[in-house]
Length: 337
Image (cartoon, rainbow, N blue to C red):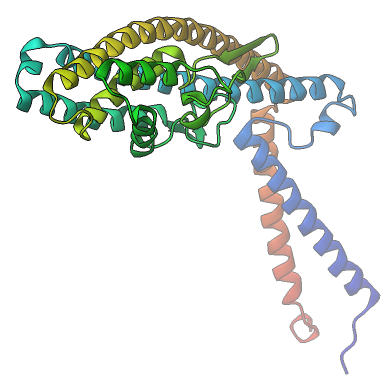
């Protein structure tokens, strides 16, 4: 008949509790040795968590501002790159469309018009640049592309010049349509899909907010799109058979491209100032984060030498407990006698 004494049962619970306590100590001390920080912060600070909570709050704010600052930097960098591409397109295409040599021969005129049509598609793709799910040239309507597709834009322009008797009349209609204010039924209403009068805003630190005031509805952008659209219309057959009218269209388009290119250069200069503001804010935030992390570390840092010594002692105690448990489990009356 098996019999378990009260003493044996008490010993079993004592060994089990000692085992659990030592394992918990080893886990805690291992964490402190690894991280160099206290595992039980309230106990270490004697329950006074005011300063610690303040540092944690400031760290959270600084990290949030740093993420916003990084996003703003990404947007501004993407806008600069896109505007650079737009300028390259306007510069190269505008010069060709103004070349009397290229326009003198019908075949070369057609080639220049076809290139303008191709560049129109590239320009619109550039203006519809998406950074992290954000269309950067759409103002505050970041969830929609800034401009309709090149095919849709050309189709709208064909409707605008339908019935125009001369190249001058067609050029005037297109110029008025692209320049029309919001609400007048022009480019701003039917081709531009972003916000009007509402700019994308970023709070990059506690005292600084920046706005990206440039969007695809800017006058300089519309000039570039006007010039490329005119070339695309010629490539689609506008005033086909009338070389003089097509050459006049191409010259007007080239002039619009040169004018728009100059405007974009000014926009890029303003954007560069915004990039400097973002960079200075990022440097301040990085310094703030470093200081706050040092303050936090100094407040809750652990003595790794002491924790390491206690860890070795706890491991030795656990090994001794295992040895004693194994010895006790092998005891029997027969071996004792």
